[in-house]
Image: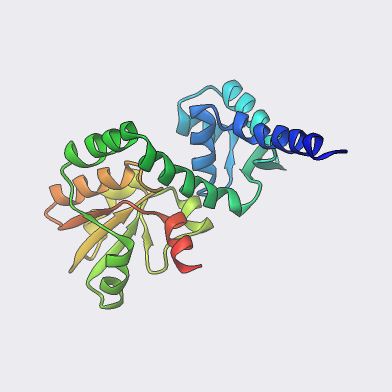
Length: 215
């Protein structure tokens, strides 16, 4: 095998990964799986796709070794094949925001201007939590919180928040986070909290970004 053959074979394999990432829905599936294992039904619900369509996308991701699965009773549970994929997704998002003005515009319009929410960053959050100045709220589903969460956070899934407010002891600012920059569950949480007279902020970063920070 000469050098040309070697390069052709290598880049052919690299292209397999690239091809599997060419679908917006497959990228969304990977993002969701970066929060923890999910059943096919749960992925279908989260992505507004049929189970059949999700299964086809998962087959492509599996063939490129980006996901793996296991059976639990009657359910097939998928997860990322390696934690390095989660790190790659963060870098991929950062690259897209840097190079594509459309990504910046969409994010600004839908996550900032229209929502009109004050934000806080991870670097600002940590010292305030250490001083007991904020209550950190994880509004993702319970199973994602149990898989991994930012230390000190309490779990109240977004669909349970309004019913839980009466029992929530709040004597400080509340910071809500969810799945990361492109997830609006934390924005919805801040709206609910503010409507009930609680001073609240949205944190754009999530568990993936926190894990990168502490590595």
